[in-house]
Image (cartoon, rainbow, N blue to C red; front, side, top):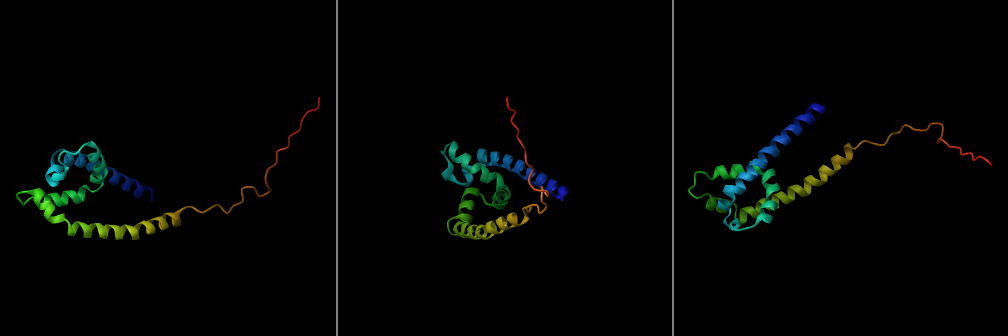
Length: 135
């Protein structure tokens, strides 16, 4: 079990490392071409987008490379994801999360260790006697 956890943590670290590099690259050179509305925005928006770019880098890479045959990738991005398809994707994501989050919480609560049934004080609670000296 420990080896499985170590492997999963290693894969997660690799995913986050690649995601950080991808997020920096996409914000530097690609984001404005993918969505022209990003042009001229400040650091705040880019900080908000950064965690999502880190986690969703495989999806964004797939979409980006899927559009490479088109001459203008920004137009292809808007054409593929706006507005009906984006709304459908958001609806499906919301429905999936509405089902998966309670299942995940139930699994966490189910796997939590139970309280010990062994009595830590079989002979009763220990007592401490305090004797005061009389002057």
